[in-house]
Image: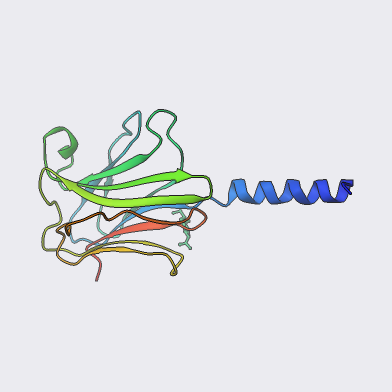
Length: 155
Ligand SMILES: *[C@@H]1O[C@H](CO)[C@@H](O)[C@H](O)[C@H]1NC(C)=O
């Protein structure tokens, strides 16, 4: 039977769900700066991350594209100059986030290790030990409540 107590409980559960969305994060461990853009239907201002710097945004559904992509270049204006881009794409679907790592126009982090992993250690991760994408699909998924971090120049 529905009483005011169970309504409160349902409300609290929904509020928890709403606030329990993790972040897409980029952590720059490289001995050089990188620049990131968050791209959906619009492109954010460039975010330059020095060594030890990080960028994060809560997982969000883009109203037009659905998924979103964080594009990273070493050149601070690389998005507009055709420089190699490493792309952390994600798509929030209900309580699941799908995440992927890819390169276009070359391999910006060739020779460095890239790791894209959830805080939830039970979820699959992506590792490029020499900064070069392996063949085949990289797409993984995890509960959307945990952060997923792309670490550039991971140890
Ligand atoms: C998740 O990301 C947020 C924003 O970057 C950060 O404040 C928080 O510490 C992260 N959580 C964990 C467990 O790393």
